[in-house]
Length: 187
Image 1 (cartoon, rainbow, N blue to C red):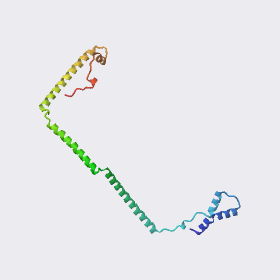
Image 2: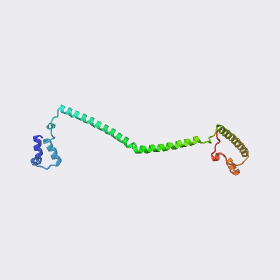
Image 3: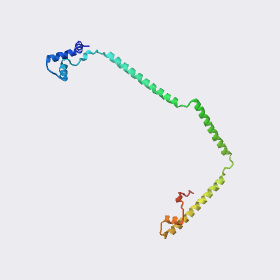
């Protein structure tokens, strides 16, 4: 520390008292501060030790080395966290054995069911299937034909009927396919 600064720090009350006695007039704290600052101003920067360029370069190299070390440790930590997460999510050996047993039971059940289906003697022959398809087509054709005839008959009656089609159907008691959301199957 500078010699003058040390004296000033030690005798600051004495300096202040001497200044006020010399001036012999009242001052505010701000005025005293402003007037004494001119005499006892800021400290000089040359009181600090000089740092050589070699020391600065050494500190910079140390900073770079420590930064690299921190980054490698952070990366290592991330890898370890990922490995820990993977291990905690993996099944243990007893859990795996239990799951294998359950899957074997399920597989055996499906195998038994498949065996029963193959062994069944009531399979539909191609001839029976073809006959069922022909009958279905025949009944669908008849359904369309009857629906068309009923629609034409109702339209003929409604030409001279004073009320609406809906009211006519309610009075007569006709229920249409559309009332029950039934659609004709494709041929």
